[in-house]
Image (tube, rainbow, N blue to C red; front, side, top):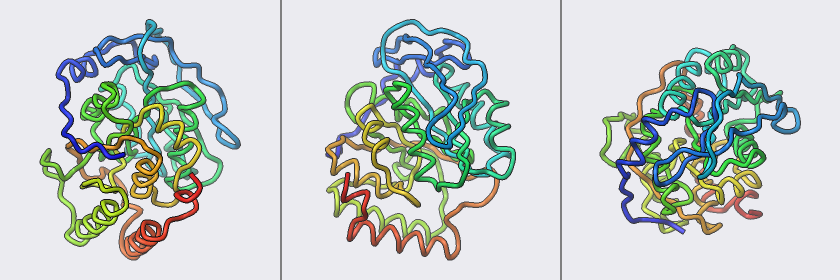
Length: 298
C-alpha cells in the first residue's frame, strides 16, 4: 500500500525530538503526543549468530509509555565519520538507542562508534548493506523496539531531520517513511548520469507499486513495528534500498516519502561508482522486472 497524501510534521513532535533529555545512552519511549516514556532497552551481548554486540553504559531510565526507537547505522570502514554520526544522532535524539552494525570493517569503525556511545554489532564477515541493515532490524525486533530509523554511517543523513521521518509513523499515518532529496528541501547535487539512473529506477518502482516515489535509493528511512517484523524476516541483499520498497508495498505496508535535506558523503567513496554503478543498475532493473527470491518468498 502506498500513501501518497502529503505528510505534515507536527511542530510539537519536532520540538519533542529536539528537546527530549532522557539522558545520554538511555532508550527513550516516544509518543505521538510528544511525551517521553518507557524503560531502557536491555542490551544483550550477542545480536545473532556471529554478531558480537558490545555497548557503552546505557544509563538513564525513561518513564513508562509509548513506542521505543532504535537508530540503525550500517557502516563499513567509516572510522573517519562514524563518531561524528553517532554524536549527531545522540544530540538530535538523546533518548534513542544508537546501534552501529559494523559490516566487517578493517579500520577502527567499531572502536570509534563505541567511543561515541553507540551499541556496536560487529559482524565477523562482510555481509553487504542488506545483511547489515537486516541485522539491525533483527536486533530491534529482539529487543522490543517499535520504530527503527536507518541512518547511513557516512554523514550524508542529518539526524536533525529525523522528526520529519518519525512523525508519520508516530501519528499512525505510515509504516515506512523514506527521506527524499528531490522534494524541494535542501540543495543536494548529484551527477547527471546518476540522477538519470534514479529516475529510471523510480519509474520502475512506480510500475511495480503504483507509488510516485522520487528517491528510491535513499537509505534515510523510518520503519514502524510491522516493517521491523517484516524486514527481520525477509530483506533483499546487495543493493536493497529499491527492492525493499516493492517488498513493503507487496506486503501491505503503508509507504510514503517526506522531503529532507541531505549532505554529500564526508569521507571515502561511494560503493556505487564507476563500473559498479552499471552493475547496480542492471541488477536492480532485473530484480524489479523479474523479481528475486526475497520478493517472491516474502
